[in-house]
Image (cartoon, rainbow, N blue to C red; front, side, top):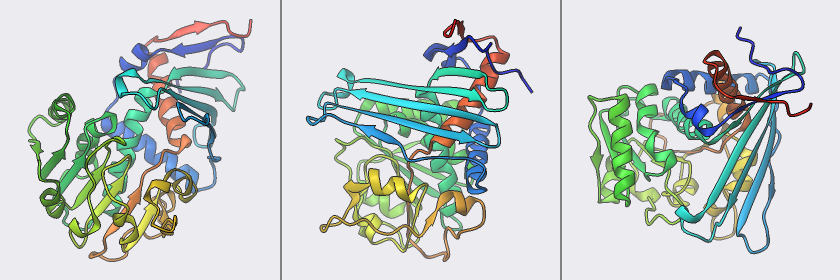
Length: 332
């Protein structure tokens, strides 16, 4: 195995440009994320609930997430800070980092910008959810939103569900639509994107609906628009609370995180629908995902730090093999 740690008085720092320059396949990302879920389901990893701080006026939010990957034998801390929540997106400041330590040697591995890690991890999880929960014979997918999570949604879906034939996108930003098209053609040059303007009609024809839009989106897919056996996956915004409350079955990556971060999907009495199964248990075969081919399923995709840790460690392995990063004598 590649020696991925720095001396005990130093820390290898991987900048945004370092991480951006690392070549990794979509299949490698999916495999790494799936392994992290499996280790968690086996009880060999730890994923405590995140800590959150937010000022009274809501102008910023910060998170801290600690975890341990028992397969890779590493512990890590992820931090996330966003400033300017009342401003337009181009005026906001967002910083996220991941610091990894080798729990076998006690030495640091690396600290890295975590932006690309999250941009890859989240659509990979959505693609795994779709693979496990979509109805048999699913052929059409609709992605709502063209931001960071929407741009790689279709390439990852095609990685886990190559049988998909119709690839639909609903978006309101021309630059975002262009970026989605570019990413699809970069990874699957023979596949075509269908940009839709009638959201209801598109939802009625989709087997998988993936909501990745930002909080200001005008899109809101209602439960009655969905096909009888449709899967709806919520990452950001773009589907209405009715898709949760009228689903035949609900699967979440974490029921505890959904209870904290999914409050915008509560009903008129402020209640969330109970979760029927957690996704790590579904992947491990210890809980059922879809129990009937005709079920409408709602899936909630919230990030688990163990997936960031596994993917971050994979990036560290690749970066160190390529000689990337700056070794800083932090503790000297």
